[in-house]
Image (cartoon, rainbow, N blue to C red):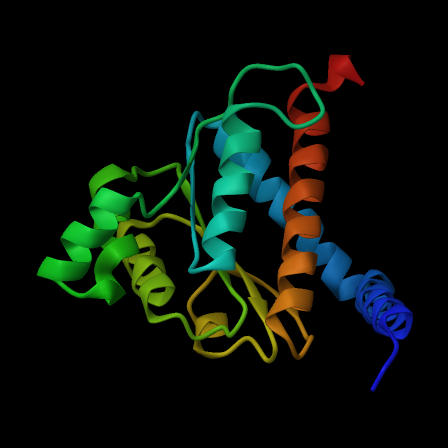
Length: 196
């Protein structure tokens, strides 16, 4: 049986390797820069950001939204953001229409041109995220997908796709939250330059 200290060292080394590989890929960094541009453009045009995902990805969506509406590092005005999928909506739409519609239906009710939809999926195959992307496409609203593994079916449905080619959901989610934190930091610097 592996010693506890070895498990810790292996887990941290694996996370380090995934981050290092990502950082050393210029195409990935350019996609991250494009992600910042989409966030900045949305807010400069008085749009709002909607985020969706399942399980841990839903928690990351909520985390991202609260740092936009609340604060991250900078004392600044609140930025409009909402993690789709509050419990009453989930149970209503899940019961009446099916779980695959929980994000698309709420997004259809709230989103307007000039907004941005971000979808998180470690598998890349979350049907409810895909239907939300289709709703956004039909409305002319841009989309960003943060995915894992090989990107799954969602890589064909978003305007900008960033894939973390890790094998397990925990490592993918760790990278997703790193990207979400960094996109807030870079967007704040663009939107509120006198503060830096």
